[in-house]
Amino acid sequence: QVKLLQSGAALVKPGASVKMSCKASGYTFTDYWVSWVKQSHGKSLEWIGEIYPNSGATNFNEKFKGKATLTVDKSTSTAYMELSRLTSEDSAIYYCSAGGPFAYWGQGTLVTVSS
Amino acid sequence: DIVLTQAPLSVSVTPGESASISCRSSKSLLSSKGITSLYWYLQRPGKSPQLLIYQMSNLASGVPDRFSSSGSETDFTLKISKVETEDVGVYYCGHRLEYPLTFGSGTKLEIK
Image (cartoon, rainbow over all chains, first blue to last red; front, side, top):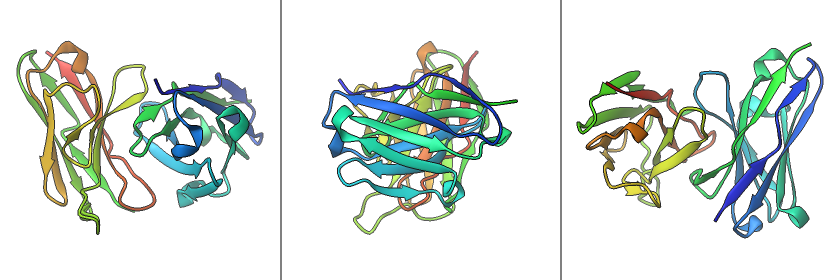
């Protein structure tokens, strides 16, 4: 079955960057767009952007342009998201999701930005 | 950006009874291909969201048929018949009509 395994929680300092991973299994990695979704504590879901592993093509929410960088490693079926210039507003759970209408979800990566 | 407005904020339901959740879109979600790009998700406590309904009225794989959804181009309703304790969580509507993809603010379902 389809699985998306995300990297563990991260504690990072303000101004730093963080890179998280999402390893896919159970399907052909290059078949589905991979999206990233932010969920601040107790809040709703916010779409950050998506990447098509086959070509590397991306689409972004304007709000996250310059904040998030999406990449993939086809050899390991892994998608990555790097967040830069972190502030307290970036503290959240970040989910990866694949399969059209967010059919499959990872377990989430908790990012805490604190000095 | 398309704004999805959900109501109510929360709903408390006795097991075995029904619950309805509304989602209103600021723009028609009917695509040029004739598909209504409205989706429903459930996020159980402490878990990742899961897809319940796609393209307004289609049940995702493994989702019990107690769940159903209907609507027009801008107004949608998720209905849960015979609510069970496992249905507890936050329900979100979302769209995939255009970028950016957006979600509603969520409706929390609790059991009485």
